[in-house]
Every structure is written in structure tokens, then in C-alpha cells.
Image (cartoon, rainbow, N blue to C red; front, side, top):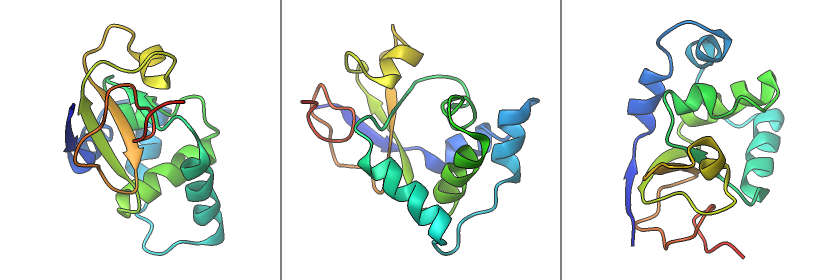
Length: 132
């Protein structure tokens, strides 16, 4: 089983430093103190997605969402800052076909974004459960 570490706070602070629109968006986003209908919709969409992985890249919370609309990216950061979602580092090779593998094809670690970090993650998972 792969080692799992909650790195949300550490990666949030790293992702707020430096130039660029993605980094500014992370720095400006306010924590979600309560779930508004918009934030709830974002959380529901994320929870329904099959692939909750991000590659082991520099500033993953800034650049890991680069294919999302800016408003969706801001909502995800608000949910992370408000602790409705957690960023979990998985110390294992990213699974085949995952977003993490596309971001970091030769990496030996990747991230999962979930409501809580699991104790362990079986090999071949992209959402905290075995890929089908």
C-alpha cells in the first residue's frame, strides 16, 4: 500500500507565491466558511468525477487546475481553504490513464483531492478506490 500524507496547508502556501494568474487566483480566494449553492455544486461535480488525481508538479493547486474555468478553479481553492476538501500526497507512481500520469508521466508521487485523506490507497487508484 502507498503512503498517504495530508499536504493541504503546505501546498496552499506554496501555490500562493510567485507570478501568474493561476497563482494570484489561489492567493485571492477566500476560505469557504459555509457551502453556498455554487460551492455545493462544485463539490458535487468533483465528488462525481472519476479522476480526482493531480500530478506531482510544482504548485499543484495553482497549475493542477489549469484546464478548469477560472470560476471553478477559484471554487476548488475556496473549498480547500475552507477544509471541505483535502489535498493528499500519494507516495506511489501515478496510475495509468490518470490526470496525474498526464501531468507527471515519470513521477513517483501524485496527489488526490478528496473530502478526507484515506489511511492508505491501493495501487491503481485515481479516486481513492480501485479504477474500473
